[in-house]
Length: 178
Image (tube, rainbow, N blue to C red):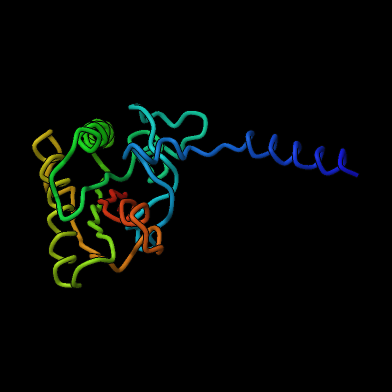
């Protein structure tokens, strides 16, 4: 009986190891998992390297899935900050290159915060985060008219847990095709 249990556990471990999750990419700010909603304020998947051709595993060229997989759709912020760190600028550089490749595509940038602080504070901070992303993209050659910003403050968390790890995931700006 012990051998049967051990065999079952080994099979489960092997199946888990074979899953195709890109969670390692989520931690560095180049992409992310989780949808923000049907209104286009977020996307699914994780970001990868530069590119944009609709190759294997990518959505249609110029689509949300293509943006998410080719450039990354979100960047993360430190507590009470809207300044861009090196990981954020690397993702925004990929987004800029992707947007230059698809000049017909317009995007939303949604700023988000963790649950701490007042609603008013977090709405203002989320707007500053979205504006920081937009301003970086504009400074790198993307027309301002192609980018709209919105702040959701703390109303759309990726992770609703009240832990430092959840808060870190919820302090972000998400770029989505509109």
